[in-house]
Length: 156
Image (cartoon, rainbow, N blue to C red; front, side, top):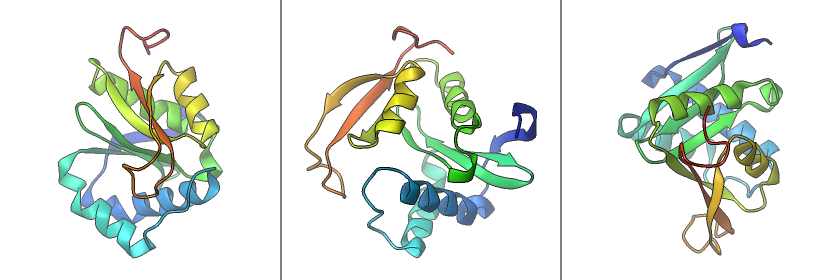
């Protein structure tokens, strides 16, 4: 896959099943806690919150291979299908979030997810707050990362 094969577009409610499938596959392949919700619960959660944030998908070959869900101040989700990781999908989605919210944003990542932490750090996000996980559903230590245009390496 090349960058020209990738299409970023606003998601529609019809994309929710594909978005949920990407999230479930990516979580299962990542060094992070297992999803505590069944697949139907993940789909219902994403569908219920669809209008509360911007939802964008990355398509390759007409198939959803990644997505980002974000508000003005938070990147809630950024997941890439495991078969398409390392191909620029995540970077393209993160660049889109930066372009749409140039004043900056934060996100939460599990402490144990070292590949995600390295991905975000390499793209200018800084670790700002570590927690013991008592505030998340998985009860697993996590950390807040932040991107601002003033961050070292924070520009796109």
